[in-house]
Length: 153
Image 1 (tube, rainbow, N blue to C red):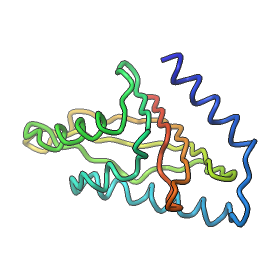
Image 2: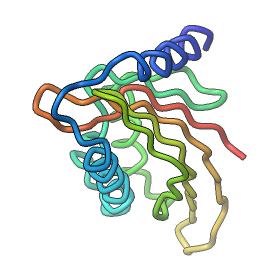
Image 3: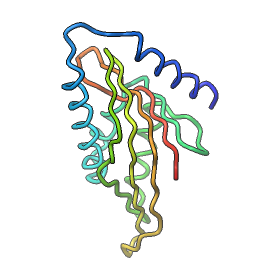
Image 4: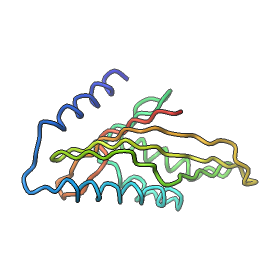
């Protein structure tokens, strides 16, 4: 946990240190928001490629009371979740509070709402997830999550 917090702090510090040329922070922020708005649609459709595609290959995902996960571990977890016949998991559109872009890094503060239903359609749990994501521009110019840190409310 300490190393993940340290990684987030280092990433946040680096945001202020790099400035790529020919970069439009507004366009980049808009592209990140579009990707974040698409993600729950992919999740709710159980589109594993789309769900996993938002995360960089070297991503670190942190969630309370869980071990840190890498990209492959996260995708395996999503595959298991989608294959669970006893529960249906649905994400609403994210409430994006802030997108801050600087060069090839961006930070996003947002809130997700996950609804879990049983086989009868009864809501068994609603989880609010306050998140901080560090996006990194990839070699192909796409933005993907490099560090994702969620906090349940």
